[in-house]
Image (cartoon, rainbow, N blue to C red; front, side):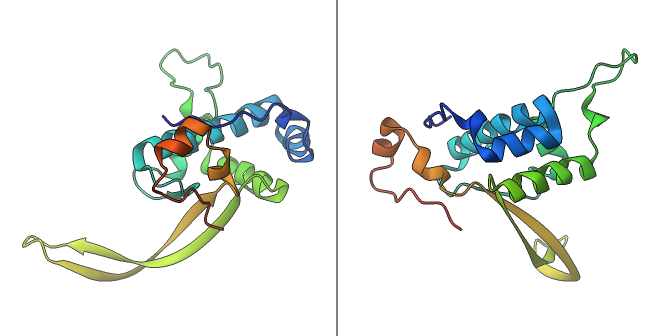
Length: 158
C-alpha cells in the first residue's frame, strides 16, 4: 500500500456534506473506503493514475463489497454482502460524481476471446467499461511515496 496525505477537514467539505445528506454515515464511510481502495490499487499497479476501470476482477460487485459493510442479518448464513445491489452502488457513485469526488467515464470496446489454439479474435460483441477517477489523487502522495517514484510522473488523468 502506498501512503497518501490525509484530509484533515474532508468531512466538512461541501462534497462530503452532500454525500452525508444523501447516504448518511454509511456514505461518508464509503467515501473514505473508496480512497483506501484507490490507494491499495496503486500499491498493486504502481501507475499513480488515480483511476480504476471496473472490469473483472475489479467489477461493480467487487467495489460494492469494498465500500459498504454488511448489514446485520437474522440469517446466520448470510455474508451480508448481498445487501447492496449494483444499482445502489451506481447510485452512490453518481452522488460522488455530482459532488466532484470522482469522475466517471464510460467507454465502449470490442470483446475478444481466445480460441482453443490461443488465437485472439473479436466476438462482434461490444462491452461498456466504466472508469472511476479521483481528480488530483496522485497529488495526495506523501513525500516518501513521491520520492520513491521520483523517476515517474505523479499525475491524475482527467
